[in-house]
Image (cartoon, rainbow, N blue to C red):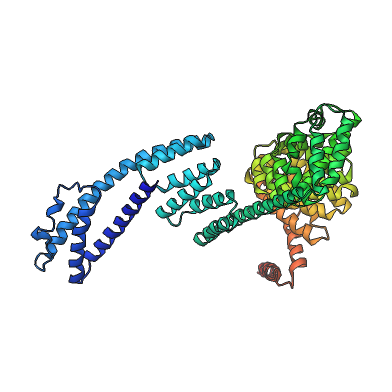
Amino acid sequence: MMENSEDLDRFLSNVDKIGQLLEDFQSSDIGVQQKAIAKADTLITTLDEPCRTKVNKTTVNTSPLLQPSMSSNTSSQEQFMKIMARDAEERRRKRMVKLKEATVLKDKGNEAYAQEDYETAVKCYSDGLAVLKDMQPLYTNRAQAYIKLEKYKEAIMDCEWALKCNERCIKAYVHMGKAYLGLKKYKEARSCFEKMLEIEPEKENMVKEYLDLVNLEEEKDNQETDAKEQLDKGERKARVVPQLLEKLSRPGQMPLYYCGGLESLSQAVTDCTGKTLFRLNNGFSIISSNDVLKSCLLQETDDLLSQELCISVLKLWRIVCHENVQENQKILMKCPLAKQSVVQLLTSDHAEVVKECLGLLSLYSNTLYGRRLAIENLDQHMLVRNLMRCISEPKQQQGITAVCILETFAAEDGFRLKLRNMSTDSVVVPLKTILGSISKSNQQVLTLLISAIGFLAKDEVIRQNLAHQRECWEAFLTALKQCSSSQYNDVIHLTLDLIINLSTVTSLTVQAHAVSLCDCCLDLLENPDEGIVTRAMGVLSTVLPQSSEAAQHAVRRKVIHTICRLLKSFYLGMSRGGALARFIVEEEEVVRQERRSLGES
């Protein structure tokens, strides 16, 4: 590596010198030009590679053409420029050959990296650097592979070389920051990520995520240091957690034995030290590898004691992940048994099991970090389908918790992206059922559900899918008719907003329901709530252009007369709408005057 360093430094130095010489040759100062000629002679004799222009470098200084005299100045410059041009062209040609070879090796390295064969990736990138020592992507790519192999010092060295090739290389700072983080050098890691912000201020959000990661890792390190110190001191509370986990790790015990152990453990991990010691003593893997506990979580048995055991495990998981012990949240969400059971158990016939599942999911939904973990690791399609089932259940509190979780996740871009190829039946069919029986008891659930679907519809693909669903429009029509007669204004507001959003999509389904939508909205124009009237006019403005039949129907119902009357009523004298209202009044007066004139003539 040292030999490579010297070669690259020398190469970059020569490039700088040649660039300066070319500037000096163009100087109007004769003295500067003559000094440049002398420096050029020296540089040519010291180049590592022989000049391919067939010029004998040992006789350059003796040639009259290159003597620093006033009479031969012009010809000397021309001769040197020709030499340099030919040499530069030869070097360019060779570099292109090397670049092509190095790129092939880089691509092979990328393929190996994608297949998680990091050793092979490192070898390919190294072979590429043997061909072309100043190819920056090879350094950053190899650094990334080194990080996967936990060779953090090698990764940092590669990032430093990448920055010598390109001092504004963002990837170099990213990987260097991650490598320092792996070495638990938090100050240096922060410095690398903050440097990114200096180079590209628009990457503020990305930098914030990296800095948050540093804070999390430092917090985790401090928690583990404190927990180990308490354990080494022999404090009773610290010793209890490993002892209880050791008992739980014994296989083949009766379910009642494990129930008692889990209950005791839940009481012992209420503080940060207890939660950390649970993690450090393999608490998650002990539970997930226990056959009795696994059978309960996968609903392989349905007796009462098994359900109690299942509830105990879910409760323990919730406790050890509570209060932002984020490392525990990460480990649990990457545990295959937890990922599978926490979603599947939402369909359990036992209310307490469902309640504990929802409590655990709610914990993850409350923070950005938790939401991202859940989105990355859980089966999103099954999660939505099972949450909708909980929302449809008659138990009010369960439905509110489930819909709050759904709404929070639906606001995340990553969540919507994963749901693009989901069958909208998972949402639309339960929605139609709920909208078909609106009451005071489910009004809160319904408003949150419509809000959640509104978030989902922000994604273009999901919006297109929903707009083509017949059941979706039937559900909206049912809701509008029920709510308008029962004064559920909040539901009407949200439903009309969603209809406006979906009706921006041109579809045969929208056109088929255009007349019915038109009728509903014309009726709503008589509603005393200005927000409802405004939204109803918004729906008409998006739906009527899609259907000539609906437009004719609206004209027959004197929609223009109704809207003009509303505009006068709502906006006359108001700063935002006064001008429009006055314009309508003036136009009507002009029409009346024209009619009088025609009558007189």
